[in-house]
Image (cartoon, rainbow, N blue to C red; front, side, top):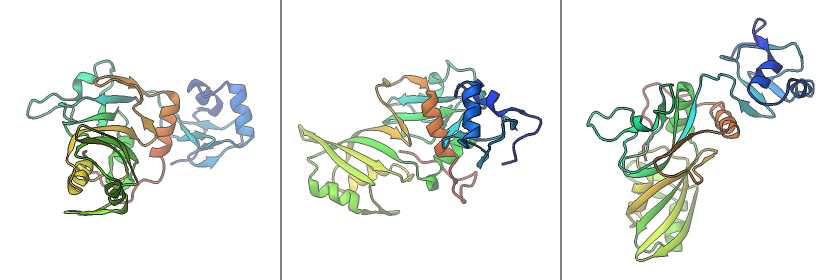
Length: 261
């Protein structure tokens, strides 16, 4: 990134406009060395920035200065493909973006029969970084699977199993419930390999019946109903931007495929 812009707007004004705090409070933050611009701590009250290009964080949390960027959380229902226009005419994501004037795109994918948390944004740089498999964003899924999952099976998932495209292990695995011949399993993964949860559960003898993604990085689905979308809160935006501004993978080429679950 470039140095702070000498002909931009004052840092305290930009942060006040972003809703961080009052100008007076932000000036105190600057003096205390709590604010960084493009990775450098600034302590000069006269610092000027370009909100469209400079990256600013307060106490290590990124601040959204470019108000043209939109960040939306969707609880994607089953039966909908993760595309803004499906070539086969299947239900796609366009119906969920009508409330926003910007042209939004999905960050990564969920397959048609998987529901849950999907991010929609017009921030192409963020979308590319977070969707790239090498970046390893943590994702939490709840899978309803066939049969009774045992403690030994949970241990296998965290210890690691062999799939046709190489070994894989869950960061965490937890048996939540067993009822009427089916089990609920919570899996935490940072892998971006395609349909990884379904393949893992099938490999240990428990094919997936239903699958929902409850968490993506710092974002939690919470009580958002299926088929509903909402803008991220200021705190959620800060957490997501902070994650995206970490060192992105060196091999994150523009033509690499996004993950699909």
